[in-house]
Amino acid sequence: LKQPGPNAANPHPSPSHALPPNFIMAANLVVPSDITVVEEKKTIGKRSLKPWEVTGLMGMAPMLHLHYSKLDRGDKRKILSRKFDTDDTSEANKICIRRQEAVRKEVVATNFMWDTALLMAGLTWWSFRRYNYQSRLVALPFIFYGGTFVGRAIGDMVTGRNAEFARDRFLASLPAKVYYN
Image (cartoon, rainbow, N blue to C red; front, top):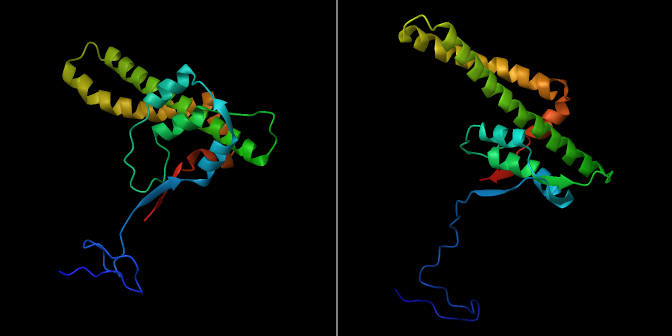
């Protein structure tokens, strides 16, 4: 193939690997969401995570992001590790503080879910101590699974998550990244 040289219409020669002019590249783009940009703008420093927050983050399941529509463990850790100015009375700062508190309640409530499920499974194992192991193994998964629902309700009550406004829970569910395709 002969490479076209520079001319008056095109002063720069095109390389041999140049794409045709009607070629559209298919690309997916992941960018920070609006709330993440506002949080980054209002952050005044780092906040250390409390022990209940660390264990709550450990108890959250990993997430496969297809469209980045939810917060994963790393995003929640970033939200909780930001420090906001309590003297700042702007609406953006109030929203950031409310969002951080709602995420904190969700993370701490996860501890109660797992603790209650393990406690109920352990008590089932103990109460079936006079039976053979097959009967214990039949009952254990069902009790453990039911314990996660009971633990979620207990965690919501202890952390006050059941009494928070729907807008606060909505703020806690806003994704940290936006996916464009």
